[in-house]
Length: 323
Image (cartoon, rainbow, N blue to C red):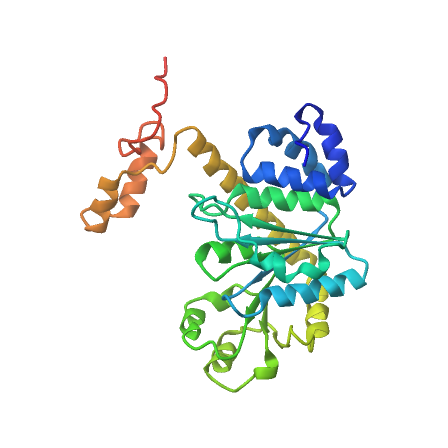
């Protein structure tokens, strides 16, 4: 694969908006590597974004998220809709790359020019979500994808935040989850606009169903089997109706912008040596209840944050003295 022509980014942009898969793949690789040379392209590209619908799919491992996404891709392709999938995977501890398991489960769509599937490593950025995810969404949006599906692995805090970037979020569960019920009661059920109970052909009355009834708060609980396809048409109807609620979508889009700005700010601060501003000593003092976090934040803020904070990180690069 030839490298990106950084001296002619207008040509690269034209290829992206015309749906050139190779150009998109190369740009996404540069984004994941945080290659600073790609950012002028992202600035040019932004005006071509904002039309794609974002659908988040989250839930514990093993509930059939990838099988369900496979069904969704098939259904939307039958309607001549172009689909992008970003499978946000845990970062490899060795390479920082994304695990490819979910892409393999969607193999039947690999040769479809109307479908683009990419695994993306989150890379464990301080402050939450990696800027690479936002930028990848923008690239697929500019590429012309009508629907972008964001799949997350597991149900940790980062996965939940990533799913909530979407305009509509599906929480996928399955009967017989056992101890996972306690996790659900701890707050997982609050994130989904729709609760999808997959493997409904195995459905049995039990604690999971009782929990769903207690906490669904007016959200639809849809029973289906992603494996057989039974019930999937009803889910798609609910998704399409949800995407018509303009006020909800606008609020989600604003949330997306706030999260992206925060993510970029964190990255910039780290690049300037202004990382996590509190020392291990202060953290230990707070843990031992010798200090409280609220007073510590107030003290840091009164001392002009990173400019004069006496508790700044020892690895931080000192700023030049003001004249």
